[in-house]
Image 1 (cartoon, rainbow, N blue to C red):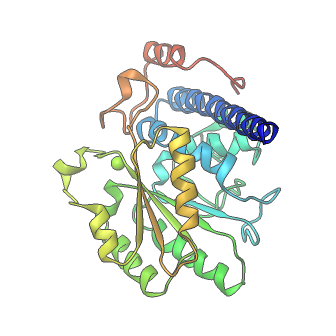
Image 2 (spheres, rainbow, N blue to C red; image 1 turned 180 degrees about the horizontal axis):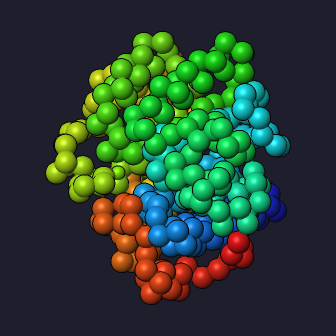
Length: 300
Ligand SMILES: [Mg+2]
């Protein structure tokens, strides 16, 4: 009995150590991704660092731990989970996460926003960048696409899930609410749509520009399953919350995750403000920001 107890305790300890190692591994990718974002945007003096930094923990965790992905890339993505980025302006984080995951060479991050690059300011498909399945940046359209892809998976008897990410300011676009109504009406229960709830958008706080009220109540009124991740920049909280979201799929309702994030997270002077929504750091600011995020996996 006593031996059995020691064995169980040891097993728990082993699991905790493995869990911590996994989180440290994800955290290393997070920090490197932050450096990629900052260096990409700085180099061309253009792009969107604020929202990118706010969603870094989420996207790194999603791609490296949560999604079930095939090796290689094809547009159909049959038999694997799919992700659609609706707030396409946060392309720096998306490109870095894809490159670090091995979809394309990290050196290509050097071409961000250059003419003829596959890494345009807003993701597009005709450049053929692996990992990108829709052009996005015209806000409000990703919800409809994700719902359509989720329905296609059902028609193909493909049990995998569809994930999507949307800005909170983006929900002011009317097309979202038509799609949200449709998804519950058609029982699209293989979709997890995450809202980046940073309370900011291009011109100021979402409450100043156009208050959206209680989003949880609104999604619930549209008959969605809703859960919140209060610490949306904490890897463990993301892992727990998204696992819970996964558990809620397949039960007749689409799932919405309200992810509370800090815009500009990880760089002290960029945090908690919309000022860095679409602004590049100066040489000095870049140096300070990089000091706060020491190289982990190696710069491109
Ligand atoms: Mg926002």
